[in-house]
Image (cartoon, rainbow, N blue to C red; front, top):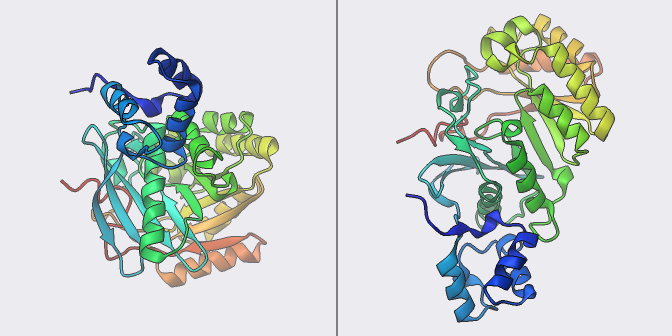
Length: 346
């Protein structure tokens, strides 16, 4: 049952000020509460210790903070931490802390489930139930940031929107969430440390360019011909590769941000040197780097990870053509590492 109280984090500071005035409070009280919510990441009004008990009681009577909770956590032998987050309406999403020598990266979700039904993705087996709100995106980052500090004694350095859902189909909330994460009044993280990954919504990629975003963009490509991409990603039927290439060019012209092409290397599907040549040809459309990804199988047997030898050969071919290529090795193999696996449990 929906609470009659309004979620206070749904209000901007400009919206909070007249609400507080109507409650008989001075304007600066709204600013204090806003700072507690977004800079200090308070999840209860009781934490707001510079407010009077009377004001805290008034806030409790009128508002709610729909904070995200860690429902389940898995720790991998390689230090990866996968969390199942419980939302206020009892839905689940996932977030992952990915540690390495130089970085502490948070991988966060943008939707409950996903509507794109990519055939290789565990989240693609789930229905899209709803979009995440900006505060729910923010909360994932806060929880994972705290895990980095407590488990690894290191600060969070990077954020990738590569969890459950398609970020560009939740455009407004993702943009607001990033604003809260990067704002000096929020978490103060650099936009250049954030990457939004899309399966390829050409219209919204162009909108990112129009909005002159400062964060990075990654395209989940995974096949560089329409024939192959149609087989694994339904979105390609309405966003063909030539249309995607044009949108990426537009984005680059508007922002100057180099794009990352993400490419999961599936065994005996897209791992030949002919496939590498197709990827090379597509990469000529826009300044970019290529990220080859080891696949975490989702248990249905449809796809398997290509061998290390094949991935290395694929990488060498692209590098021989002058491309910048990195290989993202699979993390968390001993836990429910594939996107959507943990949230789908139970």
